[in-house]
View 1: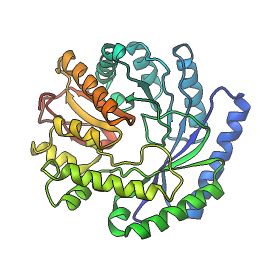
View 2: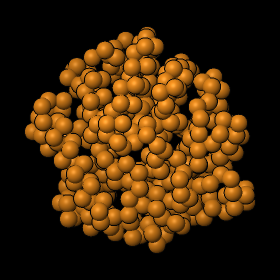
View 3: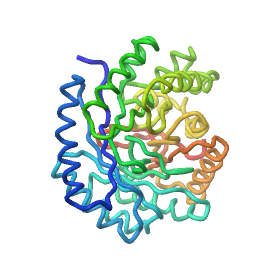
View 4: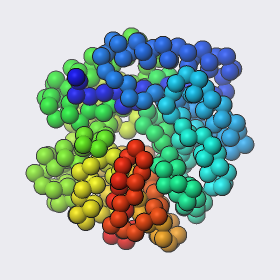
Length: 347
């Protein structure tokens, strides 16, 4: 059994193409996904479909059409980014009827209040709905990671779940393994654009644990930022030898990493830590629940803090914030993500 898997195999489409052309692309994608799994002997955990950013007047129809195609071709998730933010109620209604749909929109200072209300409205519908929405800062990014993604160039891409592989192979071995995967993908997939080699967790496959091994300290202690920077430097060196796409950095989504959850329950990891690490981690502040009693001005401040972080960092980042019907220190159950601790918005 391999120690890694293809986290997401994604097709990026131009939804303005003729419907028959899109159907042909998706039929080929389905066939090629099966072939890629055979050729690599890797599990493909999810198949995904992303579109170009869509105007508000076309969003509902595009999302519905893409969702139906995804069901037909056994694609797990779809992403339809918004060229301009939708009214929160409209977006919530659409997402309620389309459970495969993920979406993002760009942050602007003028839209802070609207985006804060969108986070609240989606969370009120369901905290799980809020996990399918991200605010993107800087510019849209083409990546197999959802929700902060958009099609910029039609083609296919891959992300990986590989903390175990990262910790057991030398940098030279890892480069060889990923080069072989990229070569097979290029031979198998139409218009293969690259791998997002971001180091991302899933529950016991923890990125937080890797950071702690690098620093020799509990995550959030002094040395954590240095360790994250070292890992990102290693990923940057790896990216020089591979076709890459997307973020290609360390990811710390709270709800997806059991070690992060453990530290949050012990109150050793706080929202302020995760916010500070957005300078070094992409997609930024991710999968972090705070109480739904949090005042609007606090959500506003989180949004603006990340805006200034992004302009300082000068790289795109994202925000996936969840308003939970629970008090800080309690757990909320987030479906496939499992029980997740609710953080204080003020610490």
